[in-house]
Image (tube, rainbow, N blue to C red; front, side):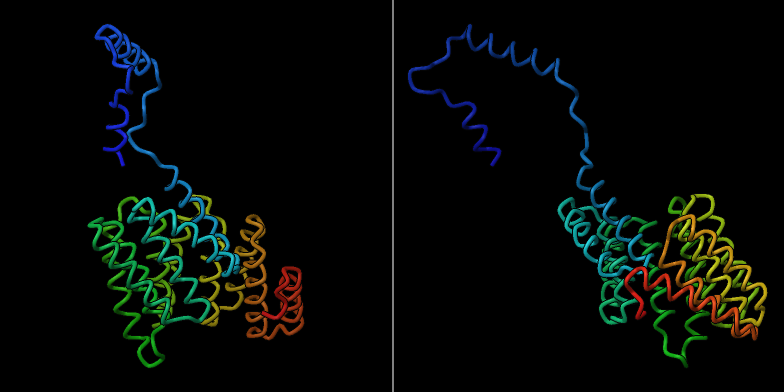
Length: 294
């Protein structure tokens, strides 16, 4: 394409041969024009910026439980990532798709996408990208482990993710995810104080960056750890923190899940009336979202 363009630009039309002086004048005018034009950028980012925006919006939709909407946004992000040939974006879009498929119950699709993301990261040679992809895939193994294997898988995942966190220097959100995975692994093996300590490390990162929905989820997991440990009063306090953050983020789906979890904690604590009130509140939010059957 470019070679044809050069040929066309240098072609002399019949009967219009340029005189040497005219050619010199044309060259001088071209030089003046080029020297006064703005400096051209060394690199363009329009496609990548568009992909980043769509990915961020998709992740937010997923955090609010709108998985179909998130997948639609991710498709545009995927197209922009592919056409800009950006390995980091390709990996992160694929990881997000894997997570959504997992939460939709499509575990085979999720495992395939986790594997594809890890392969792409390893091919890129980017150490931080590889570490982040390994954390995501380890999380997938933990969440999909068979009941009889969960303890052993959790211990292996904890050790693996600990090692990957040490390789991460700049990617704070992947570090936070790593601590979340470790917390879930520790909870699986009923190491409750270790689980909460890991979760608080994730919480500190999210709070510092004003990632409100993620911080709310951190408190949600802390509440789960406390509830499984039988510490219902402290679990209630953790869910109150989650509710406060989800209100600030206007995360309606998160609020519904917080109230649902609070209803469960109240039931365990024998607070039947409060449990019914919390469950009704959760259902009311879901109905207002048009998702009353969930």
